[in-house]
Amino acid sequence: MSRYIRERYKGFQSYTPGEQPKEMEYIKLNTNESPFPPAPGVCRRLKEADMERLRLYPDPTAAPLVNALADFYHVNPDQVFVGVGSDDVLSMCFLTFFNSEKPIFFPDITYSFYSVWADLYRIPYECQKLDEDFKLVKEDYYKENGGVIFPNPNAPTGIYEDLSVVEDIIAHNQDVIVIVDEAYIDFAGRSALELIDKYDNLIVVQTFSKARSMAGMRIGYAISNPTLIKYLNDAKYSFNSYTMNQTSIVCGVEAVKDREYFENGVRKIVETREWAKEELTKLGFTYLDSGSNFIFAKHPEYDAKELFEALKAHDIYVRFWGSERIEQYMRITIGTREEMEQLFAFLKKYMWRGSEQLQK
Image 1 (spheres, rainbow, N blue to C red):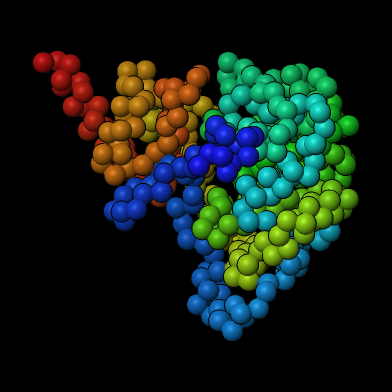
Image 2 (image 1 turned 120 degrees about the vertical axis):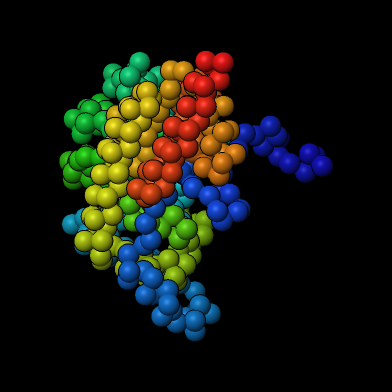
């Protein structure tokens, strides 16, 4: 059957998303979803949804959601682009802006779908190695290139780069597009959105999947200058005019409107994260300084893959890659306080049993 597949796609390595367990009795700490439900207004709009509206096409401009985001971030509506999750938005950015013969740059340890999209769209790329502390080496991005993309905070490391580092990379690449992928910025520090009006080559991409508790609704957005947003919309309308469905638009608006709920959710996750760091330290784990809603941790005495499998066998799901340089790390999403307590209870029991066996 391979004769029906274009030669360029033979042997293509697709992206592998985090595991979504089918059973209901589990602790899910593997895909960085929020442990809390969406804002009350979102739930209310779902219950009050006008089913008659579903027979109609949605607004192709998603204007209510675009306007809500523009108000929230104090930008103009023509500076906002929305899509079906930040993955969709980022992919559209790759398709629209990364089209020279020069390689694009991104870190060697980051989202694997950057390289997947580059291969899919036939974009040359080079991975720039993070330093020994898993931080960006900004000077590596000074070389001639066809564009730059990096997450801040990074994934799976969780490390947040100071805005001065981000700006330095942007400033040294003003002839190409620089995309800052900020899925986790709400748990970290200052956003590159502060630089939008200063650099016309900057695009900042964010999501509703983390701090806004709406991973299942699939909403992402880019903020930039009107010219780049127009190019994104031109590409979108050439591909699919109706990317945002009716329900996503109205629920997205409700999520944006409730700033207090949003900020309280972020605060609770950050508080639990900092407490979890202390608990991991007590158990002998080391971890990178996370500015996200997860912790990237390892233990000097326990193999990460074995620990990952033991957790999974007891219906506790975390993320493990086994890739070069991070083969002994697990990524642990911050759940509710109760979920994290169950995680630590299991780890204590697992380690106690291990020490008992060693003594025999």
